[in-house]
Length: 117
Image 1 (cartoon, rainbow, N blue to C red):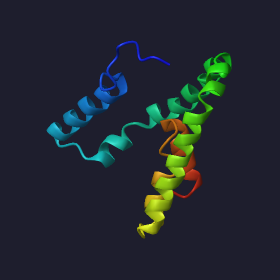
Image 2: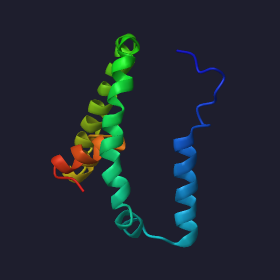
Image 3: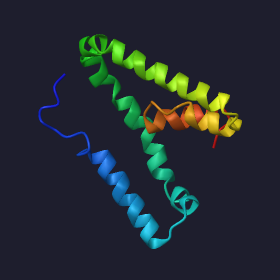
Image 4: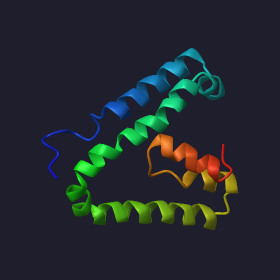
């Protein structure tokens, strides 16, 4: 799959995370305060993730073609958890790292299901 001349750092998600992060730091807003003000966004992450099902189904041939890179991502996630475990990190860190390769809505559900924050 070609990138069509797009640079990987010109990514709307990356840019928005950096801008929001800088704004919060500049204002002195603590993460806990920010997180407490975002329950509506968290509520919408689940339906947004489910809404991805139709495009995924429509592009299932491409997904089959990309099975090897997706398997590599799975191996990376599992190896990250193994490294964290070998380094003796607390279980809370392991639980936080476990869903690192999935969408935010799914990651939050996985983390909560494993007893994480």
